[in-house]
Length: 80
Image 1 (spheres, one colour):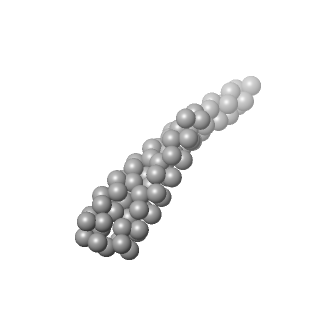
Image 2 (image 1 turned 90 degrees about the vertical axis):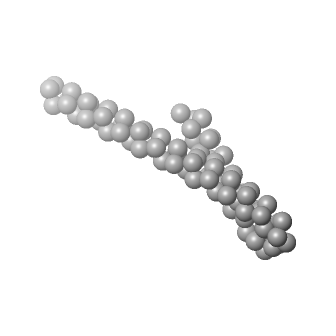
Image 3 (image 1 turned 45 degrees about the horizontal axis):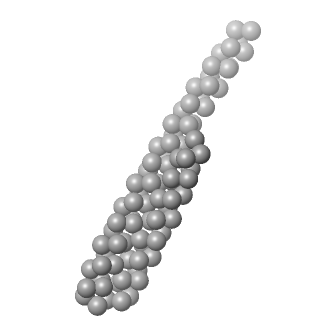
């Protein structure tokens, strides 16, 4: 029974480590999404002021991708 307890403890430790890594990844995704969202919004505004329609579209897409990434991370975090 001593071996079974050791395996149980080892499994619990691996599970906790996995959950920690998952949480770290989710926070990283959230941060990158927020960064892309803000960068896209600022870039789109600047491109709009300079009349760069192609640049404005590019930055709007970056903003939208960042928003999707951020929302996905928020949903994953809320599940925990």
